[in-house]
Length: 267
Length: 267
Image (cartoon, rainbow over all chains, first blue to last red; front, top):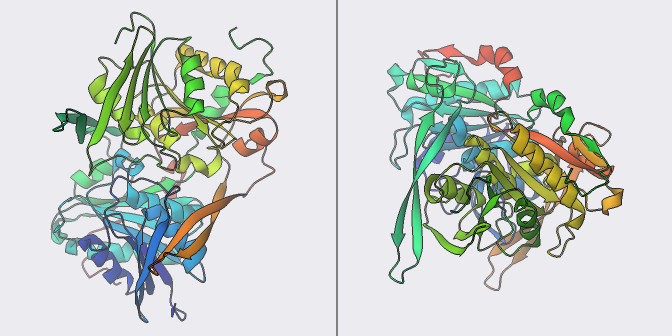
């Protein structure tokens, strides 16, 4: 790891090591420091914060220069972050960047996202971390328009850092650079995916289904949400908390508390 | 689905359809309504909120009586909930219960937990939902002591429900029933898993590693946390939010906002 005195930037993604979005993020990250890439041999889309418990995690050092150190692993994005932090790197990276994902991770998609799973893992280990996603699922999506905004966010992360336990969910609208109106700090939109299961039978008569969904926005008019920002030409930046507690509810839930139960709880 | 006018209770887990903890949860849930079980053919531990995008999801109806409807699927816990809600059930269930997990899901384990992934999916779809976990990983763990407390929580969930977007993370200490001191409403402990990667070489010289970790509690003295409650003989109940936004930060992050960038962001 020849990082000298430059920042060490850990880069990962969930679309596999060949993804165009990863290449763009690595290209920009290299302007700021020594880049260590941990990416998966296969797509890890929808893997959320999964970790691999029952199988071994394969890994291979595939490149090592003054500018970049690159590993390919067979594991989830969160596995890769854990492995880098706890085993492969000789010090804590200064920054963790995940993406650029092919497809949006706004609203409740943050819960399913492998890209954001990696960013959350960074935040748990107190590393300033951000996941980046473009609202275009195609393998050949155009990431060029996002470049100057990536630089802005990376620069601010290196200068200001983030509070403990917090990472950023950055979504980028897939529009021309001169149409991007700027960056908005937002909250996660209240929305959900409603699924259509295409049910089929295999040649032996067993049933299977393909999951395909469409997004429902419960608050399309709310101007402080990430969905609104994206639809209006802004990059959305949502500060995401690794503490999932609904703190505001704890007081009002005191009535759920009980001391010892004497009966069978059937009261 | 012969649920008559009784509540319909969707039950799932992440340890597979044969798990002892699932049997206990189904047994207690049946006292309260018609139970629909969606469980996986294999263990889904550590699967977080993953969904299956690239493979088909296999499913099979294996039991249908007045008391219970049971499916086995090949997919993640969140897949199972989605499939039940969007495809298999003729109406929205009154309750979603996930578990009882073999092993704790307190503190930051909530982020990796398939059990809690299912509960969060229920909350996204506005169903009162709770994940239950016992602090004993063994397949033959004893779930009997938890029975009266399960009844209490289920009863309160049916009567009071939960606010939109919230589910419960219930952890149960693996101690004798008369030693359990009661239920405490808590917040998620600030803690993390530090991993030890046991690195090996396969017979062909390729490297692989097994992930094994130990938990580090950053605030062992904090009496309002789930870890503290469990160590002191209480069941911990944490209200968990599907909105991951760190709302308190949004105001102070306004300086991250920019309008159009004219240069290349290299300012």
